[in-house]
Image (cartoon, rainbow, N blue to C red; front, side, top):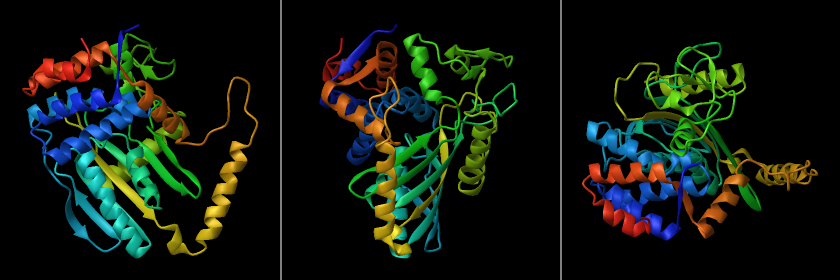
Length: 359
């Protein structure tokens, strides 16, 4: 079991601001990137949190990530937008793309946003949360343009990325439903976290380079590579292909099946559909029925060993509250990689350690 640093939230925020400043980012970009990454850690999704910074640094140094870039409108057809992210930080591009989509959905009742060429968009649930906070229902199909890491159903090697799907539904009187999942059995970043902690992954998640089942995350981190499997066998595979066709081929004009050499950049395409319930009429009925249904689920007696029934988004909110109060755990190997990334960006490691309060 790896050693773990428990870092207080304000201290971690100060330390990560120092690291992201090494990209040459403007102050607003530093806040957007740091806030989004740490929020992923707070929600329990360490795979999409500050542990991504070493790869971001490699991508930047290779020329695959362009700081201080903003989303660009390629096509404006009213309720239909095509946007280009210019390989900018996805934490900035994603937020700007959703702001544009929210404005159009409020104006027209619905909007479709086709976003391409964004660097890693991070935890896609953040963009569904942004839409839900504006009172909008949203669907998001995402592809990954990076070396493939997930095998197609029945395949013995990787053919595409983890291709997440996300949906958000605002609920009157309570926090929204936020359904956010990779179409693979496990997110690639979660295998990185397990690898750094010296842990195995659950059975049925991975295959080795010969297509044989394995629980060793090294097959996603070291050559020769194996592959992650899709969830629900053919069902997850179907969702992955759908996300590639919609988020990649349709929204971005780029799909992720190509071998990518040693490049560390991660580009995402995302097709987002946003709907304003008020524009459909009968918003009161929607709010009443949706909330009544959710409450009927939450009132179901808990199974043995479970404290109570939840809906999608509740576990993340509970984890966010705990970690905000208790601190964010960062395993020692991941922390060392972050410090090394800081050094590669010209940032003094000692200042980062001192800001975080770690050895």
